Image (cartoon, rainbow, N blue to C red; front, side):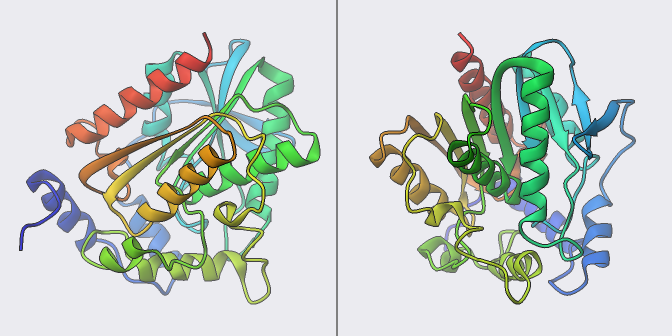
Length: 287
C-alpha cells in the first residue's frame, strides 16, 4: 500500500511520534510538547485585559490575534513563537499571541474567554483591521471568538485564518477513522483533549464551531488543512457551510502531510508554501 505521506513527511512523522506519549498525563504530554523548543529570542510581553500576551510588532494598524494549538492542554507562547514570528514577518503585520488558560485546570469556556478578552484589547490598542488566527485547538478558539464577536457586539473581525482547526467534538467524519493512527496526531489523542477541555458537564455543542446553527455574518475565512489528518473533514465541512451561508471562505488542502505540519518550516516545502499562501491571503484583505 502506498504511503499517503511524502517521504520527508513520513520521516518527520515517525520521529515526532516516537517522542510523544499516548493520552493520559497532562504533565507528561506538556513536557513532550516542549521538548523541541529552542531558546526563544527576546520578545515583548504584557497583560491584555488580564491575559498574558506576547507581541510581535506594536505599530498601529492591522493586527492578528493568534491562539496556539495543543488540545487546549499543551503548548504555550514558546512552542508557537517561531510560527508567530514567521507569520508576522511574511505579512508585515503586528501579531498578539495569547497565553490563554489551559485545561484541565481551566475548562471550557476559560480559553475562549481569554481570546475574546485579548481581541477587545487588541482592537483598542492597534486600531486597524483585526484578524483571528490559530492552529488546531487554537483554530477552534479563533473560530469561537469570531462567532462571539458577531453575536455579542464585539469588535469587527476582518478575517479568520484557521490552520487544521478542531471544530467538531463528535469526531465522526471519514478522516477521523482513516487517519486515526499512524499520522502523529491520533483520533484517540483528540478525544482525550476534548474530554480534558469539556470535563464531565461542558457544553460540547457550544464548544464546537462546526456545529454552530448560524454561520452568516462571519468574516472572510481561510481554512488550511493537511490531507492526512483526523480533523481534515470537519475543516472541509466548516468551510463549505461558511460558503453556503454567504461567507467568503477558502480551503487550502495540502496533500502528503499530517496535522501540525506548519511546525516543519524549512523542512517540508508544503509548510513554507502554506505559510506563504496564508500570509498573502491576510495581506490581500488589508488592501
